[in-house]
Length: 53
Image (cartoon, rainbow, N blue to C red; front, side, top):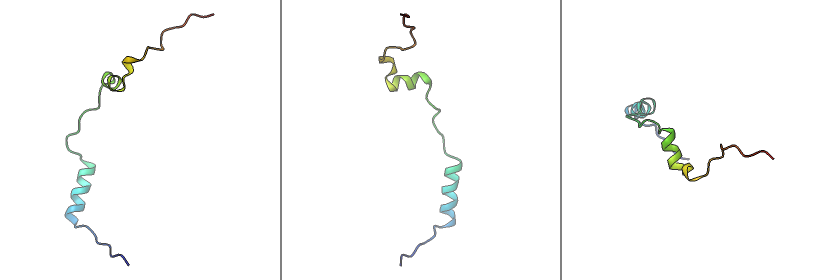
Protein backbone atom coordinates (compact mmCIF):
# COMPACT_ATOMS: atom_id res chain seq x y z
CA UNK A 1 0.00 0.00 0.00
CA UNK A 2 1.23 3.54 -0.75
CA UNK A 3 2.17 5.60 2.26
CA UNK A 4 0.95 9.21 2.13
CA UNK A 5 2.75 11.91 4.04
CA UNK A 6 1.40 15.27 5.14
CA UNK A 7 3.29 18.47 4.36
CA UNK A 8 4.70 20.57 7.18
CA UNK A 9 2.36 23.23 8.69
CA UNK A 10 4.68 26.01 7.55
CA UNK A 11 4.59 24.80 3.95
CA UNK A 12 0.80 24.62 3.99
CA UNK A 13 0.51 28.13 5.45
CA UNK A 14 2.95 29.53 2.90
CA UNK A 15 1.04 27.82 0.06
CA UNK A 16 -2.32 29.14 1.28
CA UNK A 17 -0.89 32.62 1.76
CA UNK A 18 0.46 32.63 -1.80
CA UNK A 19 -2.92 31.51 -3.13
CA UNK A 20 -4.99 34.07 -1.27
CA UNK A 21 -2.52 36.96 -1.38
CA UNK A 22 -0.62 36.71 -4.65
CA UNK A 23 2.38 38.94 -5.00
CA UNK A 24 2.39 41.87 -7.39
CA UNK A 25 0.24 40.98 -10.40
CA UNK A 26 0.32 42.87 -13.67
CA UNK A 27 -2.81 44.88 -14.44
CA UNK A 28 -5.08 43.37 -17.11
CA UNK A 29 -4.32 44.41 -20.69
CA UNK A 30 -6.24 47.26 -22.25
CA UNK A 31 -8.83 46.52 -24.97
CA UNK A 32 -6.49 48.07 -27.54
CA UNK A 33 -3.68 45.72 -26.49
CA UNK A 34 -6.01 42.72 -26.74
CA UNK A 35 -7.13 43.72 -30.25
CA UNK A 36 -3.52 44.20 -31.33
CA UNK A 37 -2.42 40.83 -29.92
CA UNK A 38 -5.31 39.03 -31.62
CA UNK A 39 -4.64 40.77 -34.92
CA UNK A 40 -8.14 42.22 -35.11
CA UNK A 41 -6.76 45.35 -36.76
CA UNK A 42 -5.89 43.27 -39.81
CA UNK A 43 -9.50 42.17 -40.41
CA UNK A 44 -11.86 44.49 -42.29
CA UNK A 45 -14.51 45.87 -39.96
CA UNK A 46 -17.96 44.36 -40.18
CA UNK A 47 -19.60 47.32 -38.51
CA UNK A 48 -19.89 49.20 -41.80
CA UNK A 49 -23.49 49.15 -42.98
CA UNK A 50 -24.12 47.30 -46.21
CA UNK A 51 -26.39 48.78 -48.85
CA UNK A 52 -29.85 47.27 -48.78
CA UNK A 53 -31.11 45.58 -51.95
